[in-house]
Amino acid sequence: MIVASPASDIVTTAFFTGVFGNYLKPGIMARGLDPNKLSTDQISINPANGDLKTAKAWRDVRGCGQGIGVLTNIERVADLIDRCRVKYADSLKRLGHLKWSLPSSTVIRA
Image: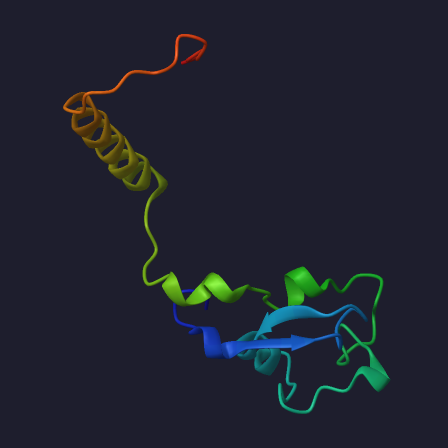
């Protein structure tokens, strides 16, 4: 849902917890609710069974922030780490060509 949803799918509402939060329209609709008709007059996490003790907004309705639009695929963590290592190594190589030095008081820890 996160990969498939654009930023326009974010709904800001206090309906689920009484505190404003950002939730995804598809997640709201999956709970049988209309994301355009949420009223804070009747706060409820799971209106289908009314069990506020076991229902959790973070589990039962998907929340997300404004950065959702940049997510376009699901990537393996190992691939992400490999890409970061390559970019880091390339950055170090580029910095090696510059004529600069750190102040003598600078401590670098690995």
